[in-house]
Amino acid sequence: MVPFNRPPYIGKEMEYISKVIRAHKICGDGQFTKKCHQLLEQMTGSQKVLLTTSGSHALEMAALLCNLEPGDEVILPSFTFSSTANAFVLAGAKLVFVDIRPDTMNIDETKIEAAITDKTRVIVPVHYAGVACEMDTIMEIARKHNLKVVEDAAQGVMSTYHGKALGTIGDFGCFSFHETKNYSMGEGGALLIRDEEKNEAAEILREKGTNRSRFLRGQVDKYTWVGYGSSYLPSDMNAAYLLAQLEEAEKINNARLASWHHYQERLAPLEQQGKLEIAHIPEGCGHNAHMFWIKLRDLEERTAMIAYLKEHDIYSMFHYVPLHSAEAGLKFGRFAGKDVYTTKESNRLTRLPMYYGLTEEEVNTVVETVKGFWR
Ligand SMILES: *Cc1c(COP(=O)(O)O)cnc(C)c1O
Image (cartoon, rainbow, N blue to C red; front, side, top):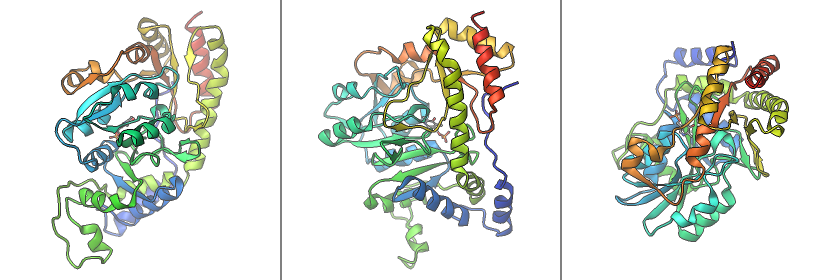
């Protein structure tokens, strides 16, 4: 049996969680949260990283920090998780979906400008599979039209674009540490803030609208309610679990990349025979092997492939149903321009097993079974 995903476990998680429990401080912003902040700042070069209770909540914080007004528009791909959209709907914005490019399944940067109106405020690039969107172009468009950029880098921890960590290029970056991601704390995420002057607003938002963070640093002598906010800080127990993994981030990343390259090498001949397509990583993108996807001829062939693999005890998963055609998508947004690739390509894509600890033998088994489908 080859499962689709196995949550990463490195070995030190238990010891670190015990430390939190013995210290009798399991609420948020304890010693392990602080260590995660420092380590993530070091790893990414971000001036400020704040752990959150989920990737969805990091997106919500980013959306709120964009200070949107009713009727404002946000540009995003339709091929993404509901959380990308929800964050901006909750902040009162209208969604404008733009088509994707078939090679990376990321937003097509050449189709963004045509979707901009006088109501547009934010562009949300989603780095699918941890492979960067064309950020130079996107940042240039944002500068030209005075728009904010929120990177949904939920899948992009340890990935880079021309040497810069994903999540650090736009105004805000959002990571997820959900169990299905490369680094896990069960449920959790992080907000990355590019400009220092946004730090305080983010801290207030995360601490129930209070200036408690300033108080803890001794900058004010009591803390009070200063604005709207919520509780976006995770328990230190979850941070302890995460720290164990972040400390081994390089090792986890290398192991995943080795599996990814193994898949690539062994499936390339099938691509040359025209049987399937695999991801091609654009120049300048350092990816993190978050997933290995293949594309079949069409929906019918994909469905058959997933069923065939399952018969052989291998678990492959298709991915997003495009948001613009979903019930909520119809209500909260519109598609700008033509849906050339979003629906067509999402119907063809399926993801092969990928996790830390996947062995070369398991990859071989998956590849041989995929080949067997055409026999
Ligand atoms: C996982 C994911 C999220 C949400 O993260 P959670 O931690 O599960 O809330 C958002 N966007 C994308 C693209 C994701 O893959």
